[in-house]
Image (tube, rainbow, N blue to C red; front, side, top):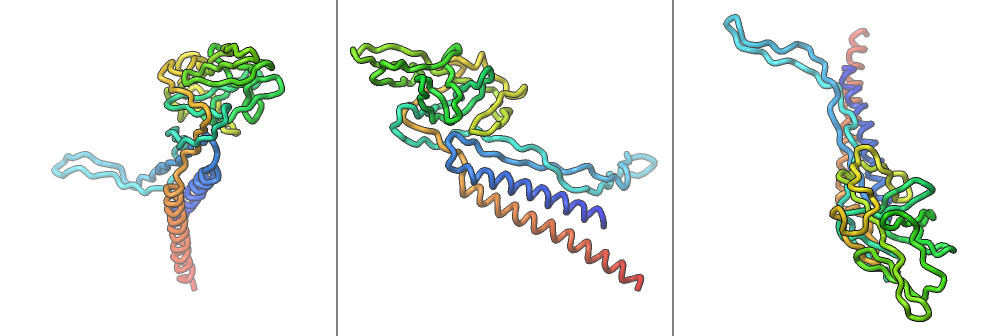
Length: 265
């Protein structure tokens, strides 16, 4: 009886964790470049009441008898499918058509993101909302000079500007990084990811668009979240029903234990 109660408790905890994941996805439905999370579960170790026996001595084999002890969290992974693209007409809003991630730098640390909403700081550097520098091909800062009258970004990531004399100069190319296992990246907040030993960075991570199978850059557009609300609401209902069913396991086991106590009376 205690096994069924603890199995129900494990199911309730897992349902709560699933609701946490779903709630975070829904909260970020309007977050640029956000990638939704999915949770998977596994069964826990089973208690063997009788071991399996092979055939012999004039009779056939016997399968093992096992009682499960509940469920546990298997993995929480990120789904890096592309989100829908929203046109903003802001020249410093970038979207990636295809694979790849922008590289931004804080000090000596590189972070990776699909959120392409960038700005110009007081020094003319292209930075994200946290002030991290957008990295150029081969490394370095992409800086728009003060004498620039206008600037533009080409699909191959080339950043150019036009001065007062209508001369066109090239600043550099925006770097894109690609990972063989993007689900292995670690979320660090601010729509940023940190590389891990299981992410599998391809190349140096500072090549221009098109290298290592990365896509093109579209200026004046942003990639939105890949969260599907209809899917999340369906998963929410499933998690809620799972939680309710596991509470029934606990209450039913408690009622049976109460009957056993009443036998004493």
